[in-house]
Image 1 (cartoon, rainbow, N blue to C red):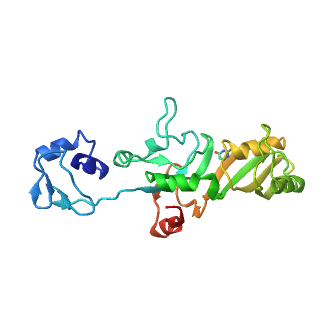
Image 2: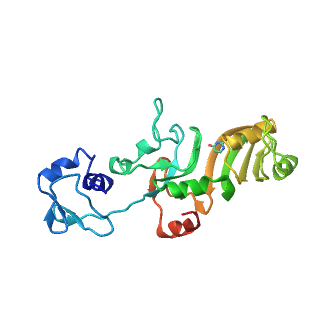
Image 3: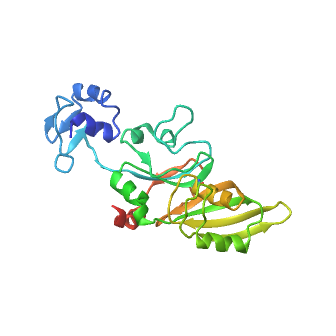
Length: 240
Ligand code: URA
């Protein structure tokens, strides 16, 4: 890997920006002063020092975000703020992207990484990764609907959903609203909202609680994020 890329990846600025560090003789590869950003470094073999301090290289980042409403699950957007723009500038430099999409008005667990293999495996329809959501529904969710979700809902466009587990948490007759939890095993566009549309009801609040073995850390405020713990990374091993 080029030295300038290595330094950009480890949070020392843009590739252009790290030029100054190298020019100022503040970067060493082993015991040799680096001269040029184009020099090659092997992150697993070479020790790179910036101002005398060894730089820790981590190829991949894994962040859990409590996505707030109003931001889009994308890397770039012409209109709205993206989840990537909520990250620190040095984290944005390593090429992170959200694993799957939550709608702009959906909150909850969002995994952000630059590990393409992990993302591919977690999103692969073949893997049937469970996604659990909490939702507020306008209307009264009934036992009969619960059975229909269990059988597999047919969306208005004719798509046949896999069976989903619908749990009725609370029904408020006065407000004509229901609190539910739903676990789905696939990830079609607007899936939960479209499943309820298929039974003539409307999702008015949606929050993802889990994705596969990852559970939302409720200590995270909306918009906050943190690196995955060792234990959480361990849980993802089968998808790497
Ligand atoms: N289903 C939806 O309808 N929206 C989401 O954001 C996630 C699942």
